[in-house]
Length: 300
Image (cartoon, rainbow, N blue to C red; front, side, top):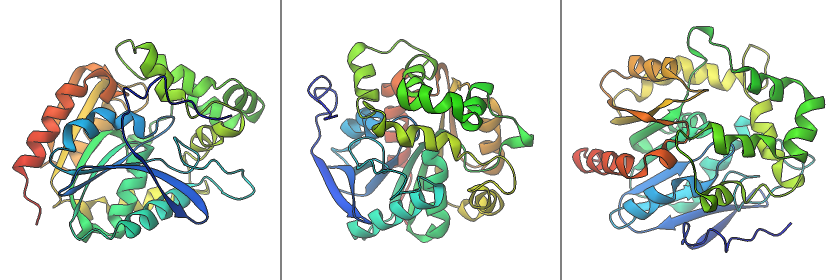
């Protein structure tokens, strides 16, 4: 199905750009000039989620937001040609950033799965990272062996339910419209968030992200997350701002406290009337905090 962007173009008025990554079209937004700020989304969002940060930061910074393969406006290949695993996501991001030929250090903005993808990239290239802005995500194993919510466990483990529900009915992305934000989304924002996932074929990434959640040794992507967990301290000297929606049903206060424990020198902001979709609930407040943080931290 062809994606009709006209219904939300007024919310996402950016020039689409593409680069070829392993024969697939990798979509990204690249607005403004100056020190680069790279935004990495999670599941089931896409670069649309960062639209207010892009608008607010691009007058001062080169503001870049990617769409993972299978997400947003990037290609959505079948499982016969792309594995939709964490390692591939990290490799894609690494190749993409290499194509930009950036001379300046990068500020990473990470959310949801983007936290693990972006942090893993940062651990590969700590010398390239100027700052990190952390939004309701994780880059370590569940603190204290915390379990994932039952609804995620069902999607992850019961294919007889997940395949027709997620691929057929788009239940994961649709449910997120009501469960992830604290405040009610407008009709146009809802359309924008789920627009790329408009057919069975175009929802593969939505399902595979959940199925790739590593919970125990032996899980496909477990070793990557365990390595990040063990080596997160390498990034300790990088300035960080942690902005957190308090009412997150997945990345709850336990994860927020774990970030603070790992990086006690980080700037922290807890938003009491926001959920997992923090940038939908409090876009202006988060933009203000990010602007202040970027202005007050020097790129070395």
